[in-house]
Length: 185
Image 1 (spheres, one colour):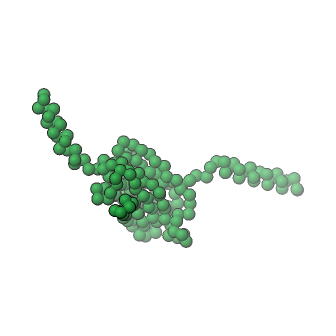
Image 2 (cartoon, one colour):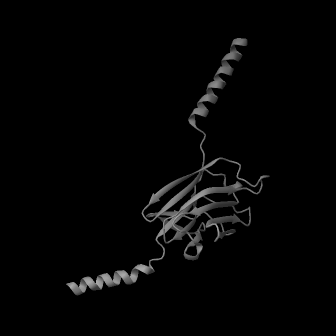
């Protein structure tokens, strides 16, 4: 029995250094976004001593099926999209830059990309690009929600919905205008 315990412990110690990738982050785009206006997406990576030398990133084409925490999802990228991993060894800055080489082929809803590293890290400071705008920025409001799970996280980029209070206020103002017109007539 003691030999079996020693053998199991030895196998554990031998296999431990080979489990290189232990944390994965998925970036997903929701159907509420105006995809015809998006031709780039950037986000920063921080935490966990992140370095591109021991990490990978992937793009997911629309033909791909991606398993995110046990749920199969489709890819969001058309064939003309590219990615580059950006880093600065002196500042520790790391980022992913995704861009469309052909604006005639926009994104679709689904999983856009993933980044895998040995330690936990976070994605932040999401930026959407639109080359048709003077400043190059996506002209609509968007939000990023985070779903964490064992061994990773999923960041979902979606449009900011117009709150119900705004619709209620607008319909109330229209009602007041209608009442005022009736009184004048």
